[in-house]
Amino acid sequence: MLDGSDLAHTLVTESSVGDAVRAYESIMLPRSIEAATGSAQGLDHLVPATAS
Image (cartoon, rainbow, N blue to C red; front, side, top):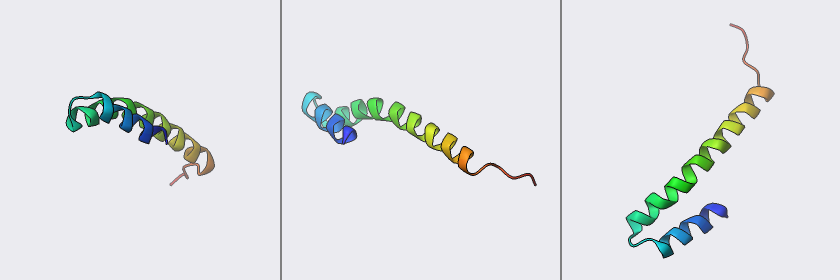
C-alpha cells in the first residue's frame, strides 16, 4: 500500500510520468533493498548453509 501511495503522490506532483517514476524509484529502491536484506538474513537464519 505504501508503494501505491508513493507512486500516486509522485504522479500528481511531478511534471511527467517519467519524472514521477524516477522520483518514485528514488523512494522505493532504498526501501526494497532494506526489505530484501532483512529477508536474506531471515532465510540464512532459518536455512543455514551446509558444509560441502
